[in-house]
Image 1 (cartoon, protein in one colour):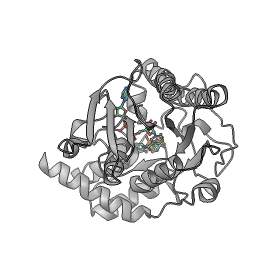
Image 2 (cartoon, protein in one colour; image 1 turned 120 degrees about the horizontal axis):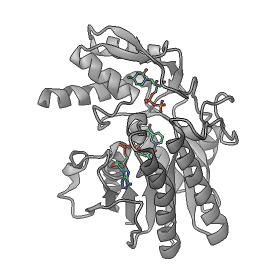
Image 3 (cartoon, helix red, strand yellow; image 1 turned 90 degrees about the horizontal axis):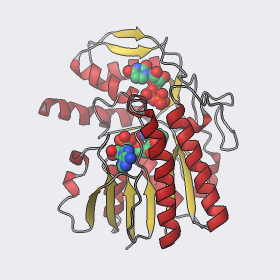
Image 4 (cartoon, helix red, strand yellow; image 1 turned 135 degrees about the horizontal axis):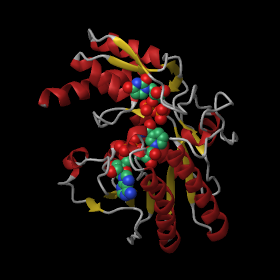
Length: 313
Ligand code: NAD
Ligand code: UDP
């Protein structure tokens, strides 16, 4: 049994990771400031004596003795990370410094939840880990993209300078139960709109693409990455290579929900990447990992979750 700290543990991905780590027999501490996470995501774990909850902001130093740290604290939806861009940069950068300082002091292994956004609006397709990216440093997404890029820089430098055992994964668009219904990301938006019979808001002409990964696949990839030997630090892409246009997604959601919603078109936000698809050769080779949940199967589970949530009111 290991003692494991999950920052952002009350968020969408973090709460699934806490579930899985506890199921695997570990002791888990969730650290969260509840900016985008919710207690309701982890309330079912509160009776578990091996689960602890700490309200804390990663931009402030924190001390605890653990074996492993998963650093997930950071808003992930464009609406939320653009709400207070300075805070988003602080969360990524100071959060990384604080957690890496902790990992160094207590000799813990630490995994960074980086993102496909480090590739920006990519000119290389599909994206491989050796692509340096195409990021606007002063655009609306830069607080998130550049914050995550600096976090990767910090991770690599703590590894080189201080021998901290690091792991970096670049997560591609992930969806599933416990996304916030008002989170603003495309899968949750479309499902909630379809279930409520509201218009489905496609930004731009809907020809931009994304590759959608079900959350269970991501959690498997995270655990496999953490379990690799110290010599493998990443970064490694963790995503589902199945690539869809946003219009494809809207049509799939309408068909799976049997909704009467109509598709409406809204302006494309600035710097919205045109295409995104992970090359996962490295993850296959180094982690023996690949996603197993197809989009339709994952959407059905996510629709069932939101359906129940909306019925509760
Ligand atoms: P989320 O917004 O649901 O979860 C983030 C969690 O971090 C929330 O619980 C939030 O309250 C917490 N948090 C935010 N700022 C904090 C701070 N300063 N101190 C402490 N806690 C703070 O998002 P998610 O989808 O679960 O994403 C988790 C991580 O994975 C993020 O780091 C995100 O950048 C990364 N990621 C996610 C995706 C995706 O598609 N879900 C894709 C790429 C990367
Ligand atoms: N999008 C959309 N309608 C919505 C929400 C998002 O068409 O209601 C588009 C958005 O413009 C982007 C894609 O869906 O092209 C994915 O958006 P999301 O915010 O989920 O994540 P991103 O990959 O852009 O960070």
